[in-house]
Image (cartoon, rainbow, N blue to C red; front, top):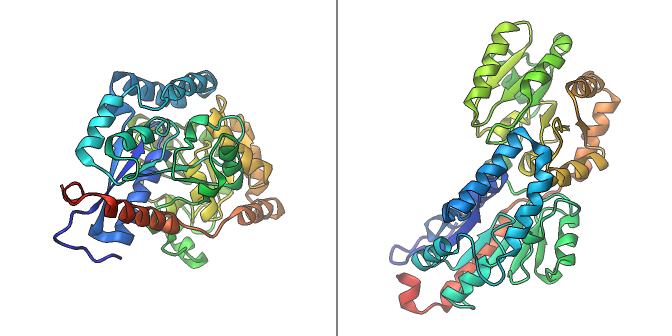
Length: 404
């Protein structure tokens, strides 16, 4: 960790994100945690929700996105194309929300701008360089998409970026095809917070953790009903479907920021005390829960899958009501590689769990596929490269600008 200089202002890094779903925000926060770990007080990261904070058009768009995600996933196949057009309108400068963003740049004066969202690349880097000086700001993108087919937004790619990090080789190839110079690309699969790399539980620790949760047994096959931060889930129909297997499986469910869903789950639990079930609302301990679960049931959230891969937890994709274009990128990557299955109905979940519940060959095959896909990396190298660029750019600033 760098030793802070009490007479110098910290290096200022601006992380661009938006709360469409929760994965973009999670990666921006993970990046901030890594900067803190590697640089201490010598650098700071301001996380900016530049789309929704930019004005009513952006706020409405984010609301529509999250509402569709919760209730009508199939509608995203229309909305996604609309967003693609809006993103493409930022040619050389940010139009929608641009005034807010340019005020932020002028006030904060970052030496690095890092984008964690597909809609915060085009125009955003050009505005930063125009206002702050072409050689005085380093621009980078991290794309969390798992593959490069339908659903991969062309707005992820701004060839003006100094650095582009993709999650997989497939994602990098798509970025290169869209115009990103290969020499400026990197691969970083698991953009997770530092605590995710703090060491994994052994089998005895996993058994103790499961046994410590109300309603759960230390040894029984555990199904984790997960959700994104905003609570999109089908927990109730899934629980109804799993109820006949209550003698073989147990369920751990989280609800995200969805108090109504949590209340409904509590009611279901009271009506079915025979089902081994542990319920929580929003949680920041996914890295624990995935370790103690035998499989996770989730939509195609990119960050949830990075954690599942890291902790060797096979996945059952919830596609009830359809999937979103971005989710399809994730679902395709894992199902085609044998590390997960997608279900379109509660009965499909029942059948998938029944195949795995004895922890026999079918289950071990899925776990082996997860291990084959696993990559031994962490955000440390990427963050270090960003910090090195920040120091270089700060050195090019006039003294007054660097310390103002």
